[in-house]
Length: 292
Image (cartoon, rainbow, N blue to C red; front, side, top):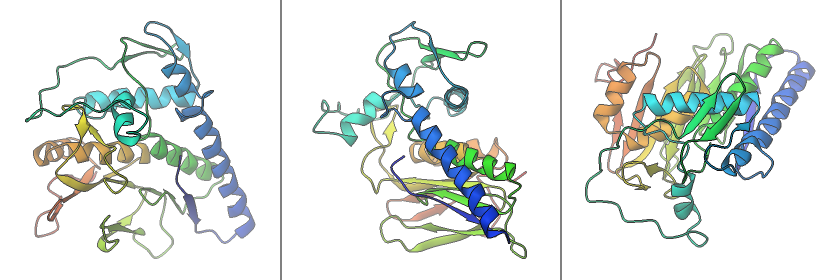
């Protein structure tokens, strides 16, 4: 997944904790082989190689990912779209891809259309409804893998731990004794300076930004997002936080506010080009999100 993963465990049994962490990392490696579109034998690659109407049987993990992404696709009014790989590649690999088309002067309304993949729960098969799409789980797969790693730790009865992937997506279990939560810093992607410290307790937070170039595509224009430098999303699960941090880079403030207000446990922070906007009022009360 092109990043470094780390696990922090608060446990007096060092050898036991090390074995649990090893199991979690083995789960990460296994998921990479199933979910990466850059591995030819992965489930996601096999779906990308299929033609419209061709049913492809995939494993449980890949099916779970696509099912959750289809739900988020509808929940975000099509702004979170994992089928835009063909739109992302020209910006990520400009020398190997056709030039991207120019954005219109104003974002155009997205016509309502179903998720481009049909999912058959009974047979764990999927098929494309139309041509012209490529799956890319870059905005979801890392969070999903971190969530599965957390499940592995719980299977080993590890209750106090923190997992991160490249520091951009973090999942916290119970904090160490005496702490309200695991301390996590939100940093300015330009300077690395700390913008805010938060305490994570059985929560996840994920950040997206433009430090790695124009890789976040606005489906309304087909071109990279502009206006926001970074976005962070807090949610109960790492996969959802991963997806929402990408989506919050695209959404307007009003869209983010409405989304968080209708999804308890979800909060957002946005770094604009010139200043910081946080989802809270002067008293520290969340106004763009609320906890359960």
